[in-house]
Structures are given as structure tokens and as C-alpha cells.
Amino acid sequence: MEGSLLHWVKSPALLRKLARSQLPMVADDLRSDLIEIVSQTGGHFSSNLGTVELTVALHYVFNTPEDRLVWDVGHQTYVHKMLTGRFDQMKTLRQKSGLSGFPKREESPYDTFGTAHSSTSISAALGMALGAKQLGSKRKCVAIIGDGALTAGMAYEALNNAGASDCDLLVILNDNDMSISPPVGALNNYLKQLMQGRFYASAKEFGKNILKNAPPLFALAKHLEQQTQELVNHNTIFEKMGFQYTGPIDGHDVRVLVDTLERIKDYKGPQFLHVVTQKGKGYQKAEIDPIAYHGPGKFDPKIGILPATQSKVTYTQVFGNWLCDMAAHDPKLVAITPAMREGSGMVKFSESYPDRYYDVGIAEQHAVTFAAGLACEGLKPVVAIYSTFLQRGYDQLIHDVALQNLPVVFALDRAGIVGPDGPTHAGLYDIAFTRCIPNMSIICPSDEAECRKLLSTAYLHNGPVTVRYPRGTGVGAAINNSLEPLPWGKAKVVHSAGDLALLAFGPLLQPALEIGKKWGFSVVDMRWAKPLDLDVLAKLAQTHKGLVTLEDGSTAGGAGSAVLEACQDMGITVEILCIGFSDEFTEHGDHSQLLKEYKLDAQGIEFKILSRWPELENSQKDQLAA
Image (cartoon, rainbow, N blue to C red; front, side):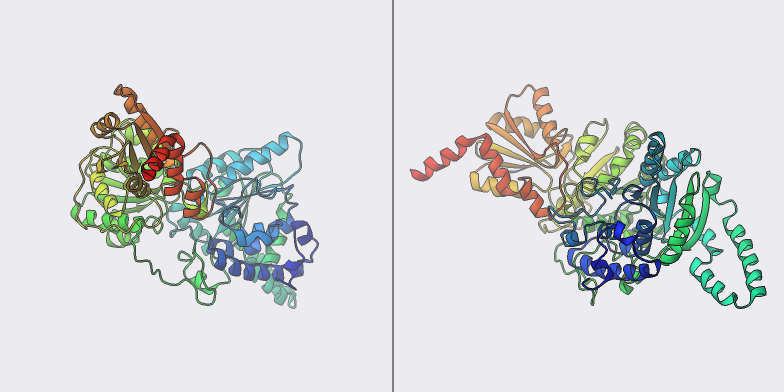
């Protein structure tokens, strides 16, 4: 950066002092530095490379932060952060106490709205626009949304509302023909048809410069341009919804972007600007394979991403392998993903069983009810969805699946904390928000081998079940590739001894075993948050002075709460310590570092236990002294 324009551009206000002719150089510098930074920190890569020029143009034309920019999903805002006073902090990206990988209101006044889940930008920007109008403010409000995010129903609810409102709102469609997984659906097909008649504004300007030397030809070209624009733009779906449509224009020509934004920013009423970009722009490997470079870890920019060398199988791979094996065994199995084919481990299934694979786009609500409809016809739907995204289909989970007691399996990936992605993606609440729903069952595998067996157990059940498992690898448990289930609703007592019983729900069985061995405590792999194994629970409560529940989720309403309720219902009086995540949002950072921070590693759990029962430590000291 030293010696470049970026060394001088510390804020959008300074950016706006540059001549327009200098903006392409700023964009080039930003792209180079972005490649260097993300290669050192890891993070969202392809999406940010695709929005460099658009970000520069937006901050150049609009008076940010007074004017509001609302970025959809938020994984396209690294350049936005670099231009808004956070360049020197970029090497702390997604690290503990460092910059968030998403817009965060507490982080900067330029981050006008916290985003990380898809399709919220238009709603938020519309609220800001109408709020500004009500307060008599002249500020501009802009929503920047991708074509993938535009597949969600919430975006259409907002477009419908905005198109009928009397407010000045600009919606920018960042059309890169790409979500995380390949784009699907009628909207994507519509945009492709719209683009078939497109011509880039940069090409238009190039042609004008040549034809100006031949005035008759220039006049003819201008007439043809108007005719073509009318053909392309006439009666677009966005105009039907009440927007004035402009585009499509080249999203990598910063001068054209600036000219267009300057022209339309003072237009009255709802505006829609269609911008065409390329994910991974400027880094050839990411251009060729934007999916692989969507969210890479650290890599050498000269070499690119190296093939994975991990010896352990991830939980996601366990699910993907099980899905294919069960599909081969049962022709009624169908699988659904809300645009997360790669992240959910479904690539092999989609290739092997294309007629039984459904990617519904970024539409979690639809995914859940769609699964319910399939189940009504006697099929066996498996919905592969991240824990944090199931929250978006909660009403459908209750009303359309559980109320009708339909046999739908929800494979909840990314349960627990998710490390660098932070609180927006943390899967801490699924036990609490599903446990209260009648007919729902909740399975918490402790390792990879149990995960496979419990997926089979869930699949064979005639009712809705969630199987929750964490991101990444487990302990490396040997996996039996059979489809054999485990007994329904039964816990496993791993070790029985001592004054306390540690009841582990999920992967926290591993630190429980470490502590149990050290202190001589009983250790139980509970496996089920609902239904609980009441027989085992009653016996443990009668034979131990205390019970300790361990879960990688929220303690408020979680598995520990279930144990407390069950003991109360059975009339059992026993001291119970519930260990998990307390009533606060977690931070982003390294996974193991966060477990230590929240005292959910072995040392932290041991500390909490001894804080509740300090006499245990004194007793052990007396025994050692004797």
C-alpha cells in the first residue's frame, strides 16, 4: 500500500476529493491488498473481489455515513471496511477482538445495519428511508443485494412494500450469477433472459468515442441504443413492482458506475439499478472456481488453495456419505437444501441422485414447508440446513411439520459455536427453540460414528427429528458404514462412579470424559435432548449428590433445562449444575479459543464444577495428604 493512493485515502471523505480518473487506480490497489489480506486471515473472498469497483463508486457518490448503505448478507463488505477507516485493522479480520467478517453497528458508523443472514437489506433500507422522511432528513438510503439473496421471500415482501411506498430508495442488484451454490429458480432464469439483450455501458462509451468522428453513424447508433434499451428494459418485473429500472451496467467499470449513480441518486421514488459483476474478479483462480474461493482459509496467493490434507472426516462429510448410502437403500429418500449444497456436504448426492435432490434457493421457510408437502405424499425428506438458518423457518417448523407430525429429518450442521463467522452464524439456540415444540425430537451425537447411527435412527422415526452436529471434525471415531440405528431415546452410561454425574449432550462428551477420569465422576452420553432417557436420569439422581449437564448451546431453555424440568416432574430433588452458553451473544474468533473463553473446555468446565462443589477439591487434597 505504501506509495499508493490508498496510503492517502483513509476515509470516504478523502476518497471523494480524488478525480474520477483516479478511481480505477484506487480499485486496483484495493483488489491487490484484499488478496494479500484474505490470504493471511482467511474469510469470504470471491464475493469481495466482485464488489471492489461498486464499493468505491458508492462511497464516492454518496455522502456516507450520513447516507445509508445497507449491504445484504454482509460477506461482500471487506472493501467497505478498508475504505471506512479500518484498513490498518484488516489483518485482525474474524479473529478474537478483531474486526468482524460482517457489518457490525458497534464497529463503525459506516456499518449502518448488522447483516449476515440473507435478504434483509431492502427491508432495513426501506425502514431507514421512511424513517428519514418522517424525520425530515434528506439522506439517501441504498440497499445492495445479490441475485442469490433475491431468491428469498423476504426480499420480495420488501420490494412489494417499497414499490408501493412514497419514498426515495435505491436498490442495487449485484448480479454475479452466483450465490454460494450455483443459482437456481425462476428468478435466475429471468435475469439470464434480461441479460441476453444487455450491452455493457463501458462498451457503449467505447463505441461512442469512435462514432463521434462520423456524425451520421453516431446518430444512427444512438437511435439503435434507445431502441435496444426500450427492448431490454420495457416492463421488467421490477418496474411492474413500482421501481424505475436502470441497467444492466458493467459493475467493474468504476467510471460508468459513478456516472450512473450520480444520475439516478436524486431521482424521486423507488429506484432499481441492475449491476453485473463477476465473483472472484481479478484473481484468476477465484474467477475460475468462485465456489472453492467463497470462504477459504489462509493460502499462498501465488499457489492458491491447496488440497485438504486432514486425516479426520468432518461431520459434514459423515452426513453426506450417510445421505448417499441411505438413498441407495431407500428410494423414498429425498434431500433438500436452501442454497447450501457445498456447505452441507450434498455435492455427491446431487450428482448421484439428481431427481431426488432439491435446491430451493435461499428460502428456508419454503424449504421446510416444501419438505412437509413431500412427506404428505409418502416420501422421506431430509432437510440439510445450518442450525442458524433453521431459525428463519420456525413458524413453518411448528405449523407445517410438527403440528402434522410429519416424518421430516432436519440435519442441523454448524450446531454450537462456529468460530470466525461469529454470533450471526452460531448454532446455539436450536435445542431451546425446538424442544418446546410438541412432536419434535432432538438428537445430539457425541462423535462422528454416533452421528451416522443417529441419522439412521432419526430417518426411521415416523415424526419430525433434528440431528445437530458441529462444524469441522470430531475425535476421529471409527465409522461403521452400516445403516444400523441406535435404540430410540436411550442414553449410554460410559462410566459410573463418584459423587457427581456428568451428563453430556453432544461433543462436550470429550471434556466430560477427561474430567470424569481425573475426578472419578460418572459420565453419560445422553444422545437425546428430547426425549430424555428418564430411567437413566432417575437412577443417576438417586445415586449421586449432583448432576452436571454439558451442552454446546444456550442453557436458557436448553438440554440442562430439560433435565431440571424432568427431575421436577418426577419429584426428584438433586442439585443440578447446567453448563453451556449463558444469556449473551458470543464473539467471533478461533473455535478452541472461544471454548476456553466461555469456560467450555475441560479446564473451564472443571473450574465451574469445583466452584459449585469446592468440598470436592478439599477432599481430594486430604486424600493426597494422607
